[in-house]
Image (tube, rainbow, N blue to C red; front, side, top):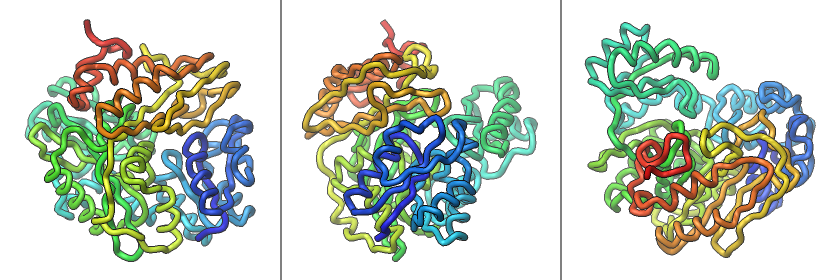
Length: 453
């Protein structure tokens, strides 16, 4: 096992990694921007080094500076968390070149899965069902129109690189496609340095269900069941749960086995997630692969009892998985909500100083949080300030526990999306398990927080 690990991230995920490292007796090295000098991850790590100015491209995305700090601190490995450099093949390759262990898959696997077009091609080769569409970059809007007409509207126009819904748009006819094409292409090029676009058939009223994988360096791979992440706004998840209220045991097992098959085909190692769209008939289609730890990993930890960060560290250190697929248990039901510093009526960020903070308590309530009273939420980073995770003996118990927890939150000085989360959790459709990716648009006021009268 490693003696010292650098965490190339910030906020709640940096604290989450620090916690497991402390449990394993591993020293931690934090990095921080000038804007994060007083952050909790800086205080809780064994040592901390300033990495640059506030903006991410001058700090948390500065590969050479991070490598330099790791070498100076004599860190044997780097954990990238999620976001930022976690799926950056160049960063993983630079770690390799400098003799530093990158806690994640190999650079070539990251690159292959980072291109949605190449990932589609690879998954089809691996025998994984993919959404009808094309697996090559569109030359121009004329080709896009031709392809879309052949597939049949509505279609999803998508950027090959990146994520978070950027460069993605649902279009219902050729006129909409022509209006959307250049704008989405330019946004993708601006955000990800790659404007390649492709088209997929739109799956009506789908669910977003993903399979968590662990794969060691000795050919062993297991799935830790599934998470349903269908409650989204702007193509970004806000509520996640495990297990899915929609899947039957046969489909659940089949999805897990297909995900393992795909991971073995590409030579995947460490923790990763294969995301699927599942239609109303329980047909599932490959959406994308996240070659990193997921924001929503805690719900899987709650139902399996497996510390996924610990497994990442052990796998990266060369250890074999200590359990088989048959030994992966599933107990109870877990729900996670993402708490954002944002206006619940517009979803716009709400930076500022948290003047008062009171967290809910309870035996089955877990917090992943990186702010406290007096913390400043800056406009420089993702506005997610916390995650709340609850576990119950069944789904209804978990929902009731989460509703009670959300009622107990007191966050003053900034606006948060808690009213919107409450509206989701208390809605009859959510309680009945009708959790498709269209949930927010179907049941919620377009401004966010209120249900239709």
